[in-house]
Structures are given as C-alpha cells and as structure tokens.
Image 1 (cartoon, one colour):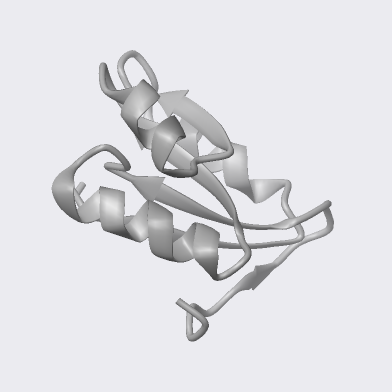
Image 2 (cartoon, one colour):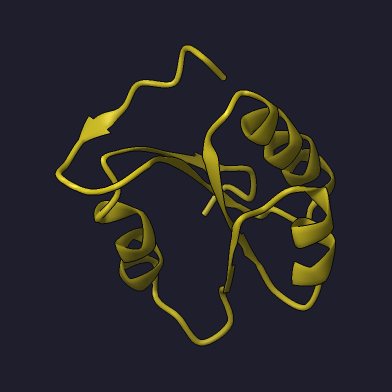
Length: 88
C-alpha cells in the first residue's frame, strides 16, 4: 500500500478509494489501506455496513452513481489513489 502513486490535488487528507470495498478482495484492501494510515473511501452496494466495520471512513453506494461521480469523492483530497477490485 505504501507504494501507491498519488495524484496531487489541493485538499485535506490522503485517501484511497476502494471500488468493491465489501467484496472478498476489497475487504482485504480496506483493511490494508486503513492500517497504512490512509482515509478509506469505500464504494459498495448493499454490503456497505460490512465495509464500514472493516475500517472504511467514507461509504459510497455505487448504485445509481456514475463512475465520474464516484471519482469526485476523492478528487478534492490532497493525495489520493484508486483501487478497483471489481474490474470496472
């Protein structure tokens, strides 16, 4: 997780958006990213409570949102990365 390349923007915190945060691989990603000290933006559907329990700081329900709307959640952060475990 420490080797994630960051996009530099003006904003508040370092964050990682995990697309598929409540999937089996996403669950590991949420925990690893959180343990590494990042703010976790978890994107999930009906299992968002599971992602929150794993350590996601911000939850986004992907149903009804376009990919560009989801990326907006991270674009205002100082540094950020995007992990897509769903292959979107």
